[in-house]
Image (cartoon, helix red, strand yellow):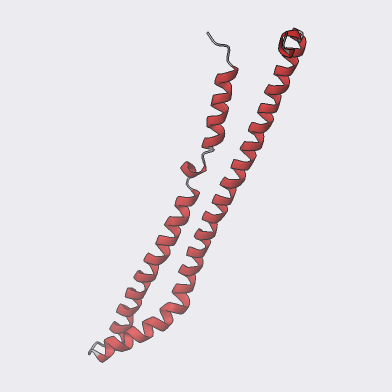
Length: 138
């Protein structure tokens, strides 16, 4: 009893192989698109963190500095400092603390957008396996 594969002509087998390879590459392109979409979402998330850090830095320098500097300056004055020195030191302390917080947020955002996080490893690995399978065995 013969199997269907034995009775198929060579041209039909080659045509089937071409269709299979074509289908494989279409699926690889779909995988690449899906992975690129994921990486785009990761970049957007990183940009959002960068923007959040920038907004915090600007907002902190405006609103928080004014309120905390006034309170801290008043505390320094109550400890016997002159008003000008107390306000200057209070402003410096608050600016440093808020600046550190903003820097942490910006650094986290930059790390999310780093090129090493955007590599399409699954697609590259899959394409490498496909190419190895298609190459004629020596």
